[in-house]
Length: 229
Image 1 (cartoon, rainbow, N blue to C red):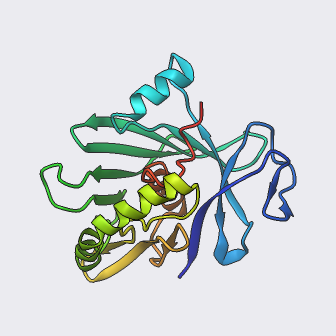
Image 2: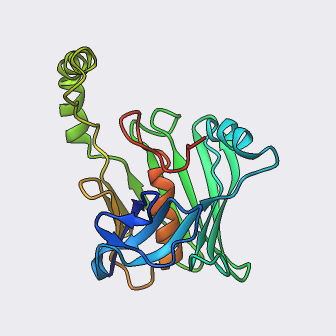
Image 3: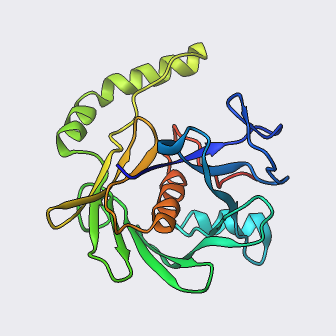
């Protein structure tokens, strides 16, 4: 494993856990860290890029699958590490491009929602410029079978949790393993909510954008970092 990229929420006092991140500019509430270099090694500062119409317009477009955000390389917002934009979204299929700070295309990310016409599981495609295309599916088929078999029990637990104000239900399988031929360049480990980079050729900017993008699609039990009002 070369890197392990994870979105970390920052409390208003600028701390992540018990470690103060120096110089975090006001307005930043999430960063991408590389936990392989330390739990709070920041590689990018996350910020939504709002369209005309501001936050209401962003949240409305978000429902169709559209996303747009910046990964700054420092808290001063002097230089963009990467920018993610939506090129198309709708009917369960969303296409995103990741651009570098010099205006170069780093790669393309495609999310095809489960049951959107191409499969029973959500499909993620990562196409880095000049590199082989990698495809990954959300969750393993076996664990999806197990999860659906236990779904009636989970519904009962969920109802009990709402009535009692405590408890939790199991989330659906979320691990994603990207494959490019016989190679596994990246994987999303759901237990740590991090994208692990294994291939030497993988661009860290694209992997960081992917880690941030995946977390915007947290299920109804998760907390997407980009849906704040």
